[in-house]
Image (cartoon, rainbow, N blue to C red; front, side, top):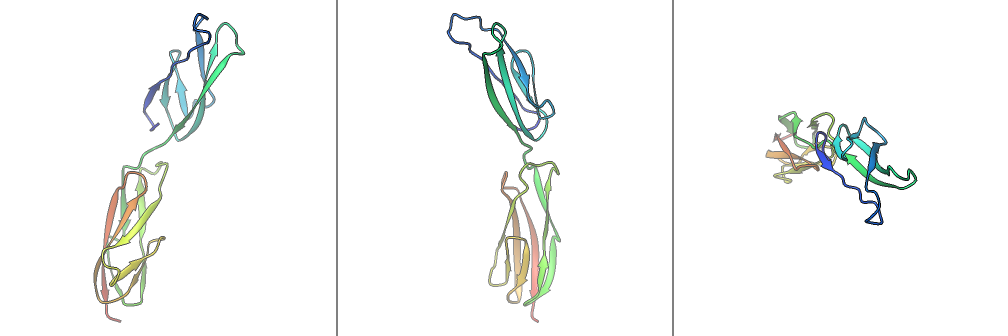
Length: 154
């Protein structure tokens, strides 16, 4: 569940003719809250166990695990442009938004690997004179940002 989202849980006590009344609780109100009707609200990144307990027999319980995440809303990369010589390197630095995003993983690609290559850490290497666009892409949401690289002869 994304932070701020809600989800209705339902509990069914067996057998079907048994009293169906339950109380709801959470293992972590800082992560997810639950109201008396079983409506769960995601509060912050993490995992919480939601428990429904029979009001007739407190030993009869059911649980659901809720994982709360913050989705990525965007990414920027610095620098947005750079000039490097053949054989030289330049480090790119991505910034994933929001800062509380659960998965900040990114990948890099080059539009012209014959001009400039980029490794998994964002280190760009000049290969031959020309221009290349390095694209950083988030694993969550496939958000992108680019850096224009000009490679000059050594």
